[in-house]
Every structure is written in structure tokens, then in C-alpha cells.
Length: 366
Image 1 (cartoon, rainbow, N blue to C red):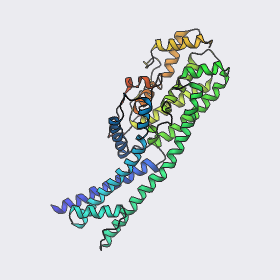
Image 2: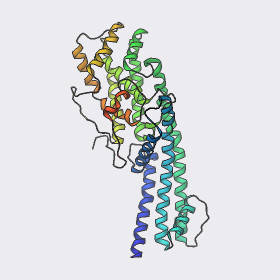
Image 3: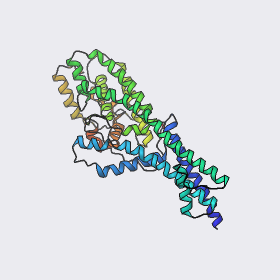
Image 4: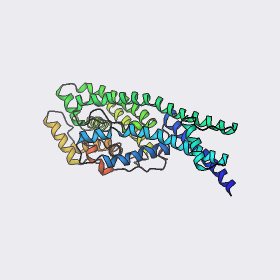
């Protein structure tokens, strides 16, 4: 019976070590979105713990200061989790092979993993395992260290446009203020450049935030800035431009919207956020007709040309918004984004609580 237990311990320990290495490779090395249950569990556990430290009643600035710790703590916890799993795995392996007690196996595993060298062993086979564990410990540490520059480069690229958006769309940003500012400054024809710029931004965010999911939770340096609310403002501005504002059709705005909702969908796929893949244009959205009427009325009062058929304009706006509505709100809820109109100000209505375990959806939704 004891022999069987030791064989099972070696098998279980080997599985744990393989799981830790596979998680590290999926999270850091693999250049595509791949769900790691370990990474997912660590970040969502840290997120759950953060809710005890961050209260809704706090000021926005104080909440943002505390939430800024989330991703860094998550990365440190992830390294600790990988090392702990390898430690546990080799403890089981040494116990199964050596026939010694648990304490001796744990001490040998810890000495090997942390390269302390306080425990030696004359057996060549066990010595080889000791070397392997020490190499794995250094590999995991080096992997995370080399991972950080990639994260911060992608973060800097993302924040460049998020920060610049305040100049054009206010703080917190909104799609209608973006339209209004360009109208007042007589630069409506230059909105095309904005849509092109943000189409590229959405493509970059889709690639980086699905392959490096920790980036989703990195906070902006300014407490009233956030990548989700910035994305929502630009998408709403583009949707208003193509549906409501009576100007020449701008196909680039339509491309921008498509790039935006595909970006949000790919990130939602990673986190297993449910959404309708082929929504109908008349499906309900979180924006009420009265809210849209108020915004359109304000724009019209500023002299901005509005399409004559308001009913058709509303249907066209809703038809564009339905493509990104639920994912925008769920993402705002997931990241605890600061309040912004038409996005995080109503994210509780489409709240989503990710499972600690379980695979995310693929890009195809299966």
C-alpha cells in the first residue's frame, strides 16, 4: 500500500511541476491568447481580496491609488504561485522516490528550488532532480523578469492615446464632447484621423491585452483616466458620427467601430464573458432613447447638423452600439473603471463575476 502511495505521489508531483511550467509558458512565452487556469485563479483571487481593501464609498482618487496595486501584486503572487506549485510537486517526488519523511522531502525541495544548497544527497538520480528543480526556479524567476518590459511597453503605448483623449473628449471622456470640440474648432474633417488612430489602437490593445491579460487591470497614471472608458468614448463618438451627425459618410469611423468591438470581444473571450456574437440591430442596449435625445439636443443647440429623421438616427446608433454595449459594460465592471458617461456609470447593470476555475471562450465562442 505504501509503495502504491509513493508511486501516486511521484505521478502527482510530476503533474504539478508540468502544470506550473505550462502556465508560465502560456502566460509569458506563447504569443497568443491562451487560458492558464493557474494565472486566472491567482489574478481573480487577488481581485477578490482587493474588494476587501477598496470600498465603493471611497473617493475616486483613493480608490484608484489602491487599485493601482492590483496588477503588480497579481504578478508577484503569480510568481509565488508557480514557485509554490513546483515546491509542492518536487516535495511529492522526493517523498515518493526517497522513502523519507515529509519534512525531509520538503526541506530537500526547498533547498533545491531556492538554490540554497543546504541539503545534499549522494544519489546521482536525486541529485539530477535537485539540479532540475533549481533550474526551474531560476527559469520561472527569469521568465517573469523578462516579461515585465513587454508589459510596460504595451502599457505605455496604450496610455499615450488614453491621456491624449482628455484634450479632445474631456475628462471623463464622452463621445459627444469629442464631436462637439471638433465642431467648435472647425476641424470636423479631421475626425477621420482620429478614427484611423484609434483603429490602430484597438488592434494593438486586442493583441496585447489578450496575450498579456495582466494589462487589462493596469491603471492609468491619472485617476480619472481608464482605457475602457476611453474606448467607450471613442466608440460612441464614432457611432454618433455615422448615425446621427449630418455630415458626409466617413467609412473610417465604421472601421474604427468594428476594430473596437472586435477588440472588446477578444478580451471578453479570454475572461469567459458571455455575449451575443451576432446581435440584431434592434436588440436592447444600455442607453435609453431619452439619454440619446438629450445628447442630440445639446449637439443641435451648438449648431452641429443633425440628421432630420431622428427615429432612424436613433435606430442606426443603437444598431452600432449593440455590437459593443454588453462587453464595454462588463469590461468596465471587471476592471472597476472610474465613472464615465455611457460606460462605467452603468456597468453594474451588466456585471460579470468571472469563475475562479474554468476555461475562457475561444475567439470563435466555443
